[in-house]
Image (cartoon, rainbow, N blue to C red; front, top):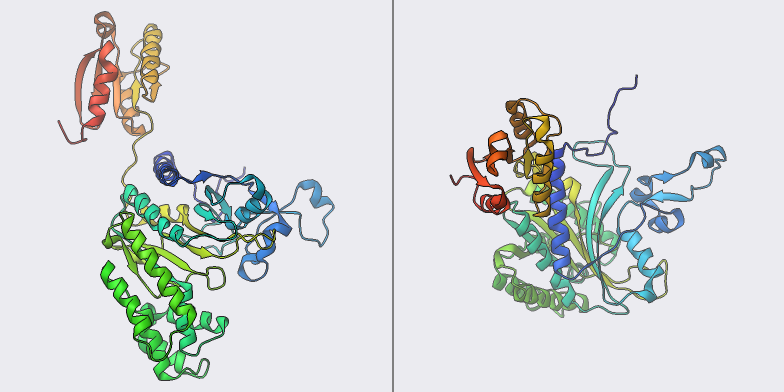
Length: 462
């Protein structure tokens, strides 16, 4: 007999946790749609030649290829025709390039689907997980004003999730590139290596990072190292402080400010002003000049969102601006800006941190059955409740009432209806509210209205 077990790197949930996860998905979808984003789904499989345009490096080593049993019989050394998507960006690029003439630009899309990566087995890392992405894609150009809209989406979404205070950190890649050029670090690859060391600032300390950057590998002058460390430590404490920090970057440098730095500062200033105009409170966003994201991919605004009380969780939503989404598939220039939430990992982290409450059942009402002759009556009551909008389950075989109550309690069903001989004779229903530990009788005609009143009251109200 084969032992039942799930593969490593997947998250399989019992119903209460699955309900909580589905509700998170509902919140994400609802907020994406509130801001005018349209749904897109792409196949879980893509042609390998399409998917591997990001070939080489870590990405290619994590791709799952797909072969039928028939293809395996004819296996060759060639790359399999199909592969599972490892993110939603490459499928989006292919989708937009393929359907370019059928889309209205700017194209505002959201996508919430599973992706697959051959991650190294470790706690909290998943090989199958949900990504929830939104992107705004322009044709030929896209105003920086769209960059300011995404923090408003992030704020609305995570406010509704109600998982604690959070901060949306903003930076601009042009600003960073210009700053490093001012310091004599011109090569983008070298900038990436320097940023990788700077990223160790919180874990290893300033002395370690200073020693590495000034050492044999990088050989940066001590004055340059100090300016880099001062630069990446900049965190604004208010909207006014963010603007003042940007002013100091362009007015406090010795000599002329290069074009990239000036353009990045101007773009970030515009974004910050519009973020505030969109109603995002100052406490929810900050300038953070250590945020880099993908050095090669992102070209302008970049975002990372963190929970204030749980910085160890890391970024719960990130993204940024890019200049040409689909250059591998079309000659059209398609700039865009987007964000992504790795929802499976976020759910797992929130659950581990104890930030998710207990999810109740999706079933509102259990209709008990005292006697087999009562079943037609029970079914009619259940049908009436379903038509009134209540998810309702019927006990299909009679048993002791205590057993039926235990079932409802264990299943997380809040309301239990008792329909015995007396209730049927008088046209009434006995309702037991298991959450509030309360019981009352109501006329059958008034049952749906009474349940709505109960649902509208806080659980602790007697």
